[in-house]
Amino acid sequence: MSEDTVLVVIGANGDLASRLLLPALGELLADHPEHRLHLVGVGSSGSTDARWRKIVRTAFTAADAADALGASVLSTPYVRADASTADGMRTLLAALPEGRVVLYFAVPPQIAASACRALRPRDLPTGTILALEKPFGSDEESARELNDVLQALLPERQVFRVDHFLGRSTVLNLLGARFANRFVEPVWSAEHIAEISVRFDETLGLEGRAGYYDRAGALEDMIQSHLLQVLAILTMAAPATLGERDVRDATGAALRATHVWEDDPVRFSHRARYTAGEAAGEQLPSYVDEPGVDPARETETLAEATFEVRDARWSGVPITLRSGKALGAPAMEIVAKMRRVRHLPEGFTGPEEPDELRFGLGPDRLSLSINVNGGRDPFALQRATLTTDLGVGAQRAYVDVLGALLDGDPTLSVRGDAAEECWRIIQPIRDAWSRGDVPLDDYPAGSHGPASWGSPGRGATA
Ligand SMILES: O=C1O[C@H](COP(=O)(O)O)[C@@H](O)[C@H](O)[C@H]1O
Image 1 (cartoon, rainbow, N blue to C red):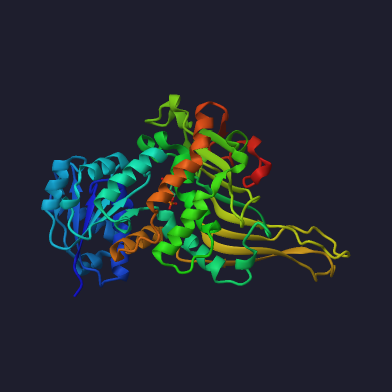
Image 2: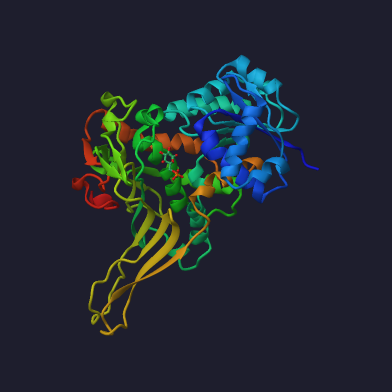
């Protein structure tokens, strides 16, 4: 029989644990009752095993997985320890039951980093896995320094830099759509694709997260992390296998080749923040009036930037990444716009639009828009769009992340070198913004962004 897992949630009393991790764990265990685990809660404040078990039960019940608690969870001890100190980490490690240890840091990244710095390799039971949430470091240098700390503790394949977008079903579907279709794979290059846009417009505002978000902003919160991972999957060369090494080598190579379009962040990046308005039926104050926001920081709530993957497959294709909060409608999708046909036979009437392949990132769907004819006017071109729902939805992202963690498979977590690259890629934009070279525009909450930006995904014509 395989060893039991000791899943240690550091930050047991926090929002991430109760809102995302525990419901996802409940779902995972309901689907995979073969897992056996001790679920240890760790917090710096006093609590009890019973109170922690209640948090777990509430989250499992919300996920319709209450039975999984009795079936798969062997125990739910709570340990009081300050994980940011060496003493705290030792206290918690000494209190763990026997089994394969997975330490999940559901705490602010500075605490996770201090905890890792406080550890010595001999403190960690053989085979321990560490899971860290974003942001991983705060720039390329600090990410490298943290990677060095981790490398001294554990082999890379035991470090999970969690990016839940890599568990989103549409993002996973990109692999199948790209590499398992003869009519996609050969045309997935600059020769046939004119531009790509990845957009993640949310209607939600700050949701009380000023403490984190006001320091991060949209560029770091979404583009540096999730959307660059999506870009990597969209543009990577075909891996020989879906094994951890092949996939992460390929995404790493794509990121290493990625640069701001024309190396000109002043022209090819934009930032803005919301003013008062109504989004998703909720009245929102101006971002600067949200509780906890420091107006002097000039944090953007909407960011857009265009990149190029400078390799033989992609040079010359603008790839625009955009994400923001408090926008008028959710718009979450990847759009690959094809080039026009080399020669359109004379005689067609009607507009010939570039073909488009769209991947919806919520709802998750795939749609292909092409030109056809044969209607009442037999040679008039018209648009036909074929759409299909895909996958199981974004809410499963953490289920897949946790499943991979319990299976010890890091394929869909961010490798150390990729984490550093993502900071390197956005650094010229951060520099231009902090010099004040790119204006901080504004947009009313509930609008589609600053009117002067035009339509998103306009790529290198920006
Ligand atoms: O990591 C984050 O992602 C969410 C969007 O992802 P979703 O799966 O919750 O839709 C974003 O709202 C948040 O600001 C960011 O930190």
